[in-house]
Amino acid sequence: MSTERNGKQKNLDDDDLDECQHDNPTFRICCIGAGYVGGPTCAIIASKCPHIQVTVVDVSAERIAAWNSDHLPLFEPGLEGIVKKIRNRNLFFSTDTKTAIREADLIFISVNTPTKSYGFGNIIGRAPDLRYVEEAARQIAHTATSNKIVVEKSTVPVKAAESIKTILKTNKQPGVSYQVLSNPEFLAEGSAISDLLAPDRVLIGGDETIEGSLAIKKLAWIYEHWVPKEKILTTNTWSSELSKLVANAFLAQRISSINTISAVCEATGASVSEVAKAVGLDSRIGNKFLNASIGFGGSCFQKDVYNLIYLAESLKLEPVAQYWLQVIKINDWQRERFAQMIVQNLFGSVSSKKIAILGFAFKKDTADTRESSSIYVCRYLLAEGASLHIYDPKVSVSRIFLDLSEQTGKTEDELREHVQIANDAYEAAKDSHALVVCTEWDEFKQLDYQLIYSTMKKPSFIFDGRLILDHDQLLSFGFNVFCIGKKPPNNQYMNQSPR
Ligand code: NAI
Image (cartoon, rainbow, N blue to C red; front, side, top):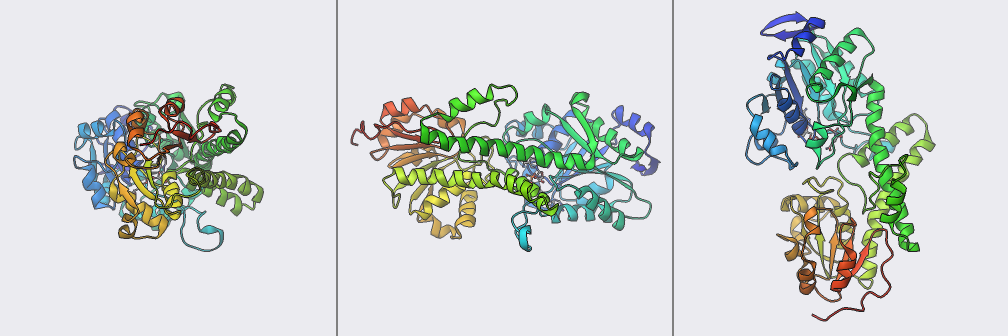
């Protein structure tokens, strides 16, 4: 194995590793894909390894321009400060993929891997679309003139590294060789920086050969700049690929599990928060991811569970596929159930009623709306003829209309007849019949609900889809309060003062 250093070819061996360990100033990383994973991950690597040069490339010139501007293309707490400090020091954003590949010792593939929306049979809506990964591998093979470690950071199906290897091998320049590693990313949007700074674990999978171990060591060395050695786990490539899918499937499963219990609670008088607390205190279970809600969203959970389902189906393990399919079905059901709760309690109709939607992002502290449950709730309410006034602290107006257009098949002009975007929660709530909390933004906990109540139509309703509000206080102000996982008090509608 060899690397290109100062224009000279050199064998990659243990001496090389020693050289790295002494913060070799010429070590270069290229990351293909400047998205939610590529951008923050490389920002942390560059900030923790000042002697490593990190270049993040993307096909989207617009995205790269944003990374190089005062307005980063994505919101992530703590990210902006880090990027602005080290940008153009040892962290670069560029559209010049070829140069970045050519100069790099190690290349992360961090491109999107959406669910396939085309094809035949069970492929549509199930199988991961690997065309961006394949394209990245082809670009590397056609461009690289020296040996590289190629790291799949994108979430991929088991054995994707094999496909990358085949593409690299069959298209490579003469004399160039590759090591392909799997290094899935476990960060969560909204807490990406703290997750990257203090990960529960870093997982690296590679070939069980001398070259494979050396490549693993080299990638581990990068993380060891700030991650304790005992948290860096090495496995074979397939275990690493599968672990990422399984981790996301388990997290999604916990949300669907507690959401099934929320429905039981609403019907029986138990409180899902109390049940979750009691259950989560069992140290074998733990208290994380037991918050009942209107369902999981984001770019990963649904896609990765489908990815696992597709894998099981491909392996003819139908019961396994059916088991995981329920996780998705419960999520869809929960979103619809919440929308029905709104319609039923507004006397069976929301037609022409103004409904304030608080939160459009799939979770707090991100502007990402991919698979956001809020979009689905809005779609159901629009189908029932509601007039929506949406407020989200971070999601742009254009993004909201784009998502609703995709979901409803309506143009922005058509949507604007029924959808308005508010500048704050108070504006959204004014003259509305109901307030619907779809995202758990902290600022929604601090609103002056007494003031909001005084500006709303009577009777006034609050539907708390995230269980973040003080329901007793809201009841005392006169609101009718409905939420996931708790039977509403019987005597609502009684204390309504006319407006
Ligand atoms: P993203 O969609 O935000 O970013 C991917 C970027 O790759 C896009 O900007 C796209 O233009 C670029 N790209 C695609 N093909 C390219 C090519 N050939 N050359 C240069 N750029 C190219 O996606 P995100 O969210 O960063 O996800 C990336 C991968 O990481 C996915 O596999 C995802 O499942 C996984 N992941 C995502 C997490 C998240 O929270 N978003 C967390 C953990 C893993």
